[in-house]
Length: 262
Image (cartoon, rainbow, N blue to C red; front, top):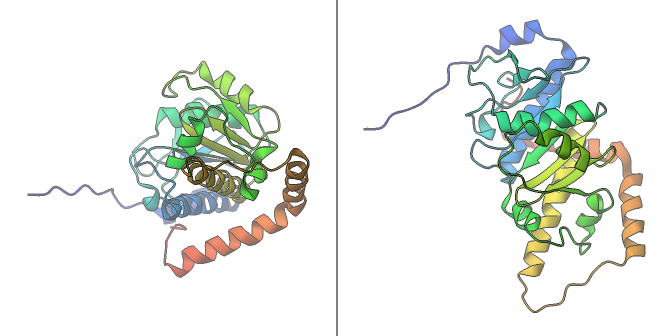
């Protein structure tokens, strides 16, 4: 005998009528990021979180605690305040406190950050456990190499007093961080920027794990001069190229019939 667990239907029509166009758009973007992460295999069961700031407010959106990433839609995202009080939750599932601890402090410390992405991918955790961290051995690594910061592992992120140290380690301008023995984190002014940074960071980690697996093969490091050039070239590309990629990703979801806008 099997038991099926189902969520009650989400009333997207009612929610859509209560919120601004700006909030609905950020909900759709964040839901798309969750769906894309499921396809890219960035998931860790129901754990890890992507968050976005609700425009013009102190609130942030986060995934309901208990839904897989490929279940997330615009309406199912939970709205919480800076103290983790639930403001809107049509699923009734609530949120994972660890997600609030990590994401809340960054949204509070960095007002220009509108999206935070945190993952536990195998490659990301593997590199987070390597003492030297991310190495300049690939073009992908240069996307985040010049901004990358690190935060030492303190256990599961449930202690409020870790928030200050985590935000401090990210710093005032970095958009990428490796959480030692834990995983990866990226931030952006938009969901698309945070997603693109995470793509490059995670792919660079995958490349490093594959390269190190070569055993006795000596790694070819990119010179400091060339690395600096590559870092600047990525910065020069700007938001226009990020948006081109993001729009292409959204079209891929539409072609597959993913209903993240519900």
